Amino acid sequence: MIKLEPFTPADFTQLIAWVDDERLMKEWSGSMFSFPLTEKSLAWYIEGSNDFNDPSVFIYKAVDSKTGVIVGHISLGGISQRDRAGRVTRVLVGNTTERRRGICQGMVKALLRIGFEDLKLHRISLGVYDFNHAAINCYLKCGFQKEGVLRDVVRHDDGYWTLIEMGILEDEWRALQQPASAPQAAQD
Image (cartoon, rainbow, N blue to C red; front, side):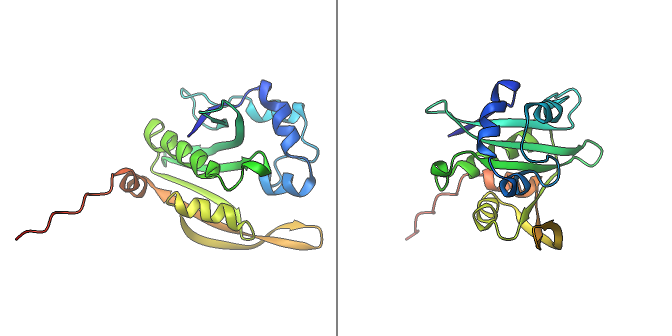
């Protein structure tokens, strides 16, 4: 099981070690950071975060509750209280050996719970590059729906990356939280 804890300066070194090349940096953060990632840029990134009295961005480390090991990073930003909307951003499963173990789903599901239950959001969206098939599958399994495509939105090297927009609404998320109904006994 994955639990989310606030991302703090004590976690900077781990994240910097994970984001170890320019392409991964761009996949993870878009144009928010320049490579290499630094403690100074991360200090700016967390400024004013994780404040339920002034919710604008929540930045978390993902911790494996069985082992206590930090296994990822995720944030929920772009929060609009007026529209009751937010956006999942900067999702990273930290170690390549950790991938394919359901960590991404655990992180996203924990973040959706915070968004829909604690923050009372109505809609949560995200953008994912079309070549990131593992992430797309993770988001679909968590209940997100594909809503659109933004073609050639990011230039990288000699090419462009296309972004898939995805979203989930509170009633869709709540329906997924309902236990599956037990099959009814056959009547004679």
